[in-house]
Length: 320
Image (cartoon, rainbow, N blue to C red):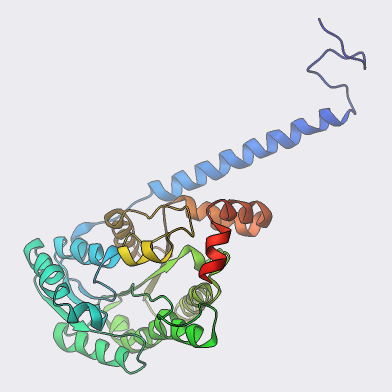
Protein backbone atom coordinates (compact mmCIF):
# COMPACT_ATOMS: atom_id res chain seq x y z
CA UNK A 1 0.00 0.00 0.00
CA UNK A 2 1.41 3.37 -0.98
CA UNK A 3 1.87 5.74 1.95
CA UNK A 4 2.01 9.51 1.62
CA UNK A 5 4.25 11.97 3.45
CA UNK A 6 1.73 12.27 6.30
CA UNK A 7 1.92 8.55 7.04
CA UNK A 8 -1.66 8.03 5.83
CA UNK A 9 -2.37 5.75 2.83
CA UNK A 10 -2.79 7.66 -0.41
CA UNK A 11 -6.45 8.40 -1.15
CA UNK A 12 -7.34 8.67 2.56
CA UNK A 13 -7.26 11.65 4.89
CA UNK A 14 -6.52 11.52 8.60
CA UNK A 15 -9.09 12.83 11.06
CA UNK A 16 -8.95 16.59 11.34
CA UNK A 17 -7.21 16.94 7.99
CA UNK A 18 -8.95 19.45 5.61
CA UNK A 19 -9.59 16.66 3.12
CA UNK A 20 -11.60 14.73 5.67
CA UNK A 21 -14.00 17.64 6.05
CA UNK A 22 -14.86 17.66 2.34
CA UNK A 23 -16.73 14.39 2.43
CA UNK A 24 -19.79 15.51 4.47
CA UNK A 25 -20.09 18.59 2.27
CA UNK A 26 -19.92 16.48 -0.84
CA UNK A 27 -22.52 14.12 0.57
CA UNK A 28 -24.80 17.07 1.34
CA UNK A 29 -24.46 18.33 -2.23
CA UNK A 30 -25.33 14.90 -3.57
CA UNK A 31 -28.36 14.73 -1.28
CA UNK A 32 -29.41 18.25 -2.27
CA UNK A 33 -29.15 17.50 -5.98
CA UNK A 34 -31.00 14.22 -5.51
CA UNK A 35 -33.75 16.00 -3.62
CA UNK A 36 -34.02 18.68 -6.30
CA UNK A 37 -34.20 15.99 -8.96
CA UNK A 38 -36.99 14.21 -7.10
CA UNK A 39 -38.83 17.51 -6.62
CA UNK A 40 -38.67 18.38 -10.31
CA UNK A 41 -39.69 14.85 -11.29
CA UNK A 42 -42.73 15.01 -9.01
CA UNK A 43 -43.61 18.52 -10.21
CA UNK A 44 -43.56 17.65 -13.89
CA UNK A 45 -44.93 14.13 -13.52
CA UNK A 46 -48.11 15.30 -11.79
CA UNK A 47 -50.19 16.10 -14.87
CA UNK A 48 -53.98 16.28 -14.65
CA UNK A 49 -54.48 17.91 -18.04
CA UNK A 50 -57.87 17.06 -19.56
CA UNK A 51 -58.08 18.11 -23.23
CA UNK A 52 -61.89 17.88 -23.13
CA UNK A 53 -61.96 20.79 -20.67
CA UNK A 54 -61.05 23.15 -23.53
CA UNK A 55 -63.85 22.05 -25.83
CA UNK A 56 -66.16 25.03 -26.24
CA UNK A 57 -63.90 27.31 -24.16
CA UNK A 58 -63.95 30.98 -25.17
CA UNK A 59 -60.40 32.16 -25.73
CA UNK A 60 -58.97 35.60 -26.51
CA UNK A 61 -55.41 35.07 -27.76
CA UNK A 62 -53.10 37.99 -28.56
CA UNK A 63 -50.04 37.87 -30.78
CA UNK A 64 -51.27 34.98 -32.90
CA UNK A 65 -49.59 35.85 -36.20
CA UNK A 66 -46.48 33.64 -35.90
CA UNK A 67 -44.30 31.51 -33.65
CA UNK A 68 -45.72 30.34 -30.32
CA UNK A 69 -48.87 32.45 -30.80
CA UNK A 70 -49.70 30.78 -34.09
CA UNK A 71 -49.09 27.34 -32.57
CA UNK A 72 -51.29 28.25 -29.60
CA UNK A 73 -54.11 29.08 -32.02
CA UNK A 74 -53.72 25.72 -33.77
CA UNK A 75 -53.70 23.75 -30.50
CA UNK A 76 -56.81 25.53 -29.20
CA UNK A 77 -58.53 24.92 -32.55
CA UNK A 78 -57.77 21.18 -32.40
CA UNK A 79 -59.21 21.09 -28.90
CA UNK A 80 -62.48 22.68 -30.05
CA UNK A 81 -62.16 26.15 -28.47
CA UNK A 82 -63.91 29.29 -29.73
CA UNK A 83 -61.24 31.84 -30.68
CA UNK A 84 -60.66 35.55 -31.06
CA UNK A 85 -57.16 36.14 -32.42
CA UNK A 86 -55.19 39.36 -32.62
CA UNK A 87 -52.14 40.28 -34.67
CA UNK A 88 -50.20 43.43 -35.37
CA UNK A 89 -51.72 45.64 -38.03
CA UNK A 90 -48.75 45.13 -40.37
CA UNK A 91 -49.32 41.37 -40.39
CA UNK A 92 -52.91 41.93 -41.50
CA UNK A 93 -51.91 44.42 -44.16
CA UNK A 94 -49.77 41.74 -45.79
CA UNK A 95 -53.04 39.83 -46.37
CA UNK A 96 -51.30 36.61 -45.42
CA UNK A 97 -52.14 36.18 -41.77
CA UNK A 98 -55.96 35.96 -41.79
CA UNK A 99 -56.20 33.48 -44.65
CA UNK A 100 -53.35 31.33 -43.35
CA UNK A 101 -53.83 31.18 -39.57
CA UNK A 102 -57.61 31.63 -39.45
CA UNK A 103 -58.11 29.22 -42.34
CA UNK A 104 -55.93 26.60 -40.69
CA UNK A 105 -57.81 26.97 -37.41
CA UNK A 106 -61.11 26.37 -39.18
CA UNK A 107 -59.70 23.24 -40.82
CA UNK A 108 -58.43 22.02 -37.45
CA UNK A 109 -61.91 22.23 -35.93
CA UNK A 110 -62.39 25.61 -34.25
CA UNK A 111 -66.21 26.04 -33.94
CA UNK A 112 -65.96 29.83 -34.02
CA UNK A 113 -63.00 31.99 -34.96
CA UNK A 114 -62.65 35.76 -35.34
CA UNK A 115 -59.67 38.05 -35.78
CA UNK A 116 -58.92 41.71 -35.18
CA UNK A 117 -55.97 43.95 -36.03
CA UNK A 118 -54.36 45.20 -32.81
CA UNK A 119 -51.34 47.46 -32.55
CA UNK A 120 -50.72 47.27 -28.81
CA UNK A 121 -48.46 50.32 -28.94
CA UNK A 122 -51.68 52.38 -29.09
CA UNK A 123 -53.19 52.77 -25.59
CA UNK A 124 -56.77 52.81 -26.93
CA UNK A 125 -56.48 49.43 -28.69
CA UNK A 126 -56.82 47.01 -25.69
CA UNK A 127 -60.33 48.27 -24.90
CA UNK A 128 -61.39 47.75 -28.50
CA UNK A 129 -59.93 44.23 -28.54
CA UNK A 130 -61.66 43.07 -25.33
CA UNK A 131 -65.01 44.56 -26.36
CA UNK A 132 -64.73 42.84 -29.75
CA UNK A 133 -64.09 39.47 -28.04
CA UNK A 134 -66.98 39.91 -25.63
CA UNK A 135 -69.34 40.85 -28.47
CA UNK A 136 -68.31 37.87 -30.61
CA UNK A 137 -68.05 35.18 -27.93
CA UNK A 138 -70.46 36.45 -25.27
CA UNK A 139 -67.81 36.18 -22.55
CA UNK A 140 -64.34 34.82 -21.88
CA UNK A 141 -62.98 31.70 -20.23
CA UNK A 142 -59.33 32.31 -21.12
CA UNK A 143 -57.33 35.45 -21.76
CA UNK A 144 -53.98 34.40 -23.25
CA UNK A 145 -51.54 37.31 -23.42
CA UNK A 146 -48.77 36.45 -25.84
CA UNK A 147 -48.00 39.56 -27.92
CA UNK A 148 -44.59 41.20 -27.67
CA UNK A 149 -42.57 43.89 -29.35
CA UNK A 150 -38.93 44.79 -29.82
CA UNK A 151 -37.63 48.36 -29.92
CA UNK A 152 -38.98 50.21 -32.98
CA UNK A 153 -36.65 50.82 -35.90
CA UNK A 154 -34.59 53.99 -35.67
CA UNK A 155 -34.38 54.09 -31.86
CA UNK A 156 -31.50 53.10 -29.62
CA UNK A 157 -32.35 50.06 -27.52
CA UNK A 158 -31.82 51.83 -24.17
CA UNK A 159 -33.22 55.22 -25.08
CA UNK A 160 -36.17 56.69 -23.16
CA UNK A 161 -38.27 56.58 -26.33
CA UNK A 162 -37.61 52.88 -26.91
CA UNK A 163 -38.19 52.06 -23.23
CA UNK A 164 -41.52 53.89 -23.20
CA UNK A 165 -42.65 52.03 -26.34
CA UNK A 166 -41.54 48.64 -24.97
CA UNK A 167 -43.33 49.21 -21.68
CA UNK A 168 -46.57 50.07 -23.49
CA UNK A 169 -46.48 46.99 -25.72
CA UNK A 170 -44.99 44.44 -23.34
CA UNK A 171 -46.45 45.58 -20.01
CA UNK A 172 -49.07 48.33 -19.96
CA UNK A 173 -51.20 46.73 -22.69
CA UNK A 174 -51.18 43.48 -20.63
CA UNK A 175 -52.46 45.44 -17.63
CA UNK A 176 -55.16 47.12 -19.73
CA UNK A 177 -56.36 43.88 -21.32
CA UNK A 178 -56.44 42.17 -17.93
CA UNK A 179 -58.42 44.88 -16.16
CA UNK A 180 -60.97 44.99 -18.98
CA UNK A 181 -61.38 41.21 -19.24
CA UNK A 182 -61.34 40.46 -15.49
CA UNK A 183 -65.09 40.94 -14.88
CA UNK A 184 -65.94 38.36 -17.55
CA UNK A 185 -63.24 35.97 -16.33
CA UNK A 186 -64.61 36.35 -12.79
CA UNK A 187 -68.09 35.37 -13.97
CA UNK A 188 -66.78 32.29 -15.77
CA UNK A 189 -64.16 31.37 -13.12
CA UNK A 190 -61.70 31.58 -15.96
CA UNK A 191 -57.96 31.80 -16.40
CA UNK A 192 -55.35 34.41 -17.25
CA UNK A 193 -52.38 32.96 -19.12
CA UNK A 194 -49.39 35.31 -19.38
CA UNK A 195 -46.64 34.30 -21.80
CA UNK A 196 -43.48 35.94 -20.52
CA UNK A 197 -39.76 35.34 -20.88
CA UNK A 198 -36.76 34.09 -18.98
CA UNK A 199 -35.59 37.72 -19.09
CA UNK A 200 -38.44 38.51 -16.70
CA UNK A 201 -36.87 36.27 -14.06
CA UNK A 202 -33.13 36.29 -14.80
CA UNK A 203 -31.65 39.58 -16.08
CA UNK A 204 -28.99 39.45 -18.75
CA UNK A 205 -26.80 41.99 -20.49
CA UNK A 206 -27.91 44.44 -23.18
CA UNK A 207 -31.65 43.90 -22.71
CA UNK A 208 -32.45 46.48 -20.02
CA UNK A 209 -35.77 47.97 -21.29
CA UNK A 210 -37.18 44.64 -22.51
CA UNK A 211 -36.16 42.88 -19.30
CA UNK A 212 -37.70 45.71 -17.25
CA UNK A 213 -41.05 45.18 -18.98
CA UNK A 214 -40.92 41.42 -18.37
CA UNK A 215 -39.95 41.85 -14.71
CA UNK A 216 -42.88 44.25 -14.38
CA UNK A 217 -45.21 41.52 -15.67
CA UNK A 218 -43.97 39.12 -13.03
CA UNK A 219 -44.46 41.68 -10.27
CA UNK A 220 -47.89 42.83 -11.42
CA UNK A 221 -49.43 39.41 -11.98
CA UNK A 222 -47.79 37.95 -8.86
CA UNK A 223 -49.40 40.71 -6.81
CA UNK A 224 -52.72 40.37 -8.63
CA UNK A 225 -52.78 36.65 -7.86
CA UNK A 226 -52.51 37.44 -4.15
CA UNK A 227 -55.26 40.08 -4.38
CA UNK A 228 -57.65 37.70 -6.12
CA UNK A 229 -56.88 35.01 -3.56
CA UNK A 230 -57.64 37.15 -0.50
CA UNK A 231 -60.85 38.38 -2.19
CA UNK A 232 -61.93 34.78 -2.99
CA UNK A 233 -62.05 35.53 -6.72
CA UNK A 234 -61.72 32.24 -8.58
CA UNK A 235 -59.58 33.40 -11.52
CA UNK A 236 -56.34 31.49 -12.09
CA UNK A 237 -53.16 33.23 -13.23
CA UNK A 238 -50.53 31.16 -15.03
CA UNK A 239 -47.15 32.78 -15.67
CA UNK A 240 -45.25 31.11 -18.51
CA UNK A 241 -41.48 31.53 -18.69
CA UNK A 242 -40.24 30.73 -22.18
CA UNK A 243 -36.86 31.01 -23.84
CA UNK A 244 -36.05 32.40 -27.27
CA UNK A 245 -39.17 32.46 -29.43
CA UNK A 246 -39.25 30.17 -32.47
CA UNK A 247 -40.10 32.82 -35.04
CA UNK A 248 -38.19 34.62 -37.78
CA UNK A 249 -38.33 38.09 -36.19
CA UNK A 250 -37.01 36.84 -32.86
CA UNK A 251 -34.19 34.90 -34.51
CA UNK A 252 -33.21 37.88 -36.63
CA UNK A 253 -33.20 40.22 -33.64
CA UNK A 254 -30.62 38.14 -31.74
CA UNK A 255 -28.61 36.83 -34.68
CA UNK A 256 -24.94 36.79 -33.63
CA UNK A 257 -25.82 38.05 -30.13
CA UNK A 258 -26.77 34.82 -28.36
CA UNK A 259 -25.78 31.21 -28.83
CA UNK A 260 -29.05 29.99 -27.32
CA UNK A 261 -31.35 27.95 -29.55
CA UNK A 262 -35.02 28.72 -29.96
CA UNK A 263 -37.53 26.41 -28.30
CA UNK A 264 -39.77 24.51 -30.77
CA UNK A 265 -42.99 26.51 -31.15
CA UNK A 266 -45.50 23.59 -31.07
CA UNK A 267 -44.01 22.08 -27.90
CA UNK A 268 -43.73 25.42 -26.11
CA UNK A 269 -47.32 26.26 -27.06
CA UNK A 270 -48.61 22.92 -25.75
CA UNK A 271 -46.80 23.50 -22.45
CA UNK A 272 -48.53 26.89 -22.15
CA UNK A 273 -51.96 25.40 -22.89
CA UNK A 274 -51.51 22.55 -20.41
CA UNK A 275 -50.46 25.00 -17.71
CA UNK A 276 -53.45 27.26 -18.33
CA UNK A 277 -55.94 24.40 -18.47
CA UNK A 278 -54.66 22.88 -15.21
CA UNK A 279 -54.58 26.34 -13.57
CA UNK A 280 -50.90 25.97 -12.73
CA UNK A 281 -49.25 29.02 -11.20
CA UNK A 282 -46.19 28.70 -13.41
CA UNK A 283 -44.92 27.05 -16.60
CA UNK A 284 -41.25 26.80 -17.56
CA UNK A 285 -40.25 25.72 -21.05
CA UNK A 286 -37.73 24.23 -21.42
CA UNK A 287 -38.04 22.84 -17.88
CA UNK A 288 -34.39 23.63 -17.07
CA UNK A 289 -35.37 27.32 -16.89
CA UNK A 290 -37.06 26.55 -13.59
CA UNK A 291 -33.73 25.41 -12.19
CA UNK A 292 -31.98 28.49 -13.61
CA UNK A 293 -34.54 30.76 -11.93
CA UNK A 294 -33.93 29.00 -8.61
CA UNK A 295 -30.17 29.27 -9.06
CA UNK A 296 -30.46 33.02 -9.49
CA UNK A 297 -31.60 33.34 -5.89
CA UNK A 298 -29.40 30.64 -4.40
CA UNK A 299 -26.17 31.02 -6.40
CA UNK A 300 -26.17 34.33 -8.27
CA UNK A 301 -22.55 34.15 -9.48
CA UNK A 302 -22.77 30.69 -11.11
CA UNK A 303 -26.10 31.75 -12.62
CA UNK A 304 -24.45 34.80 -14.17
CA UNK A 305 -21.67 32.56 -15.48
CA UNK A 306 -24.16 30.27 -17.23
CA UNK A 307 -25.87 33.26 -18.87
CA UNK A 308 -22.54 34.67 -20.06
CA UNK A 309 -21.76 31.43 -21.88
CA UNK A 310 -24.81 32.00 -24.12
CA UNK A 311 -23.90 35.59 -24.98
CA UNK A 312 -21.63 37.02 -27.65
CA UNK A 313 -20.63 40.10 -25.66
CA UNK A 314 -19.02 41.99 -28.55
CA UNK A 315 -22.04 41.61 -30.84
CA UNK A 316 -24.50 42.37 -28.04
CA UNK A 317 -22.69 45.58 -27.07
CA UNK A 318 -22.66 46.72 -30.69
CA UNK A 319 -26.40 46.02 -31.04
CA UNK A 320 -27.16 48.08 -27.93
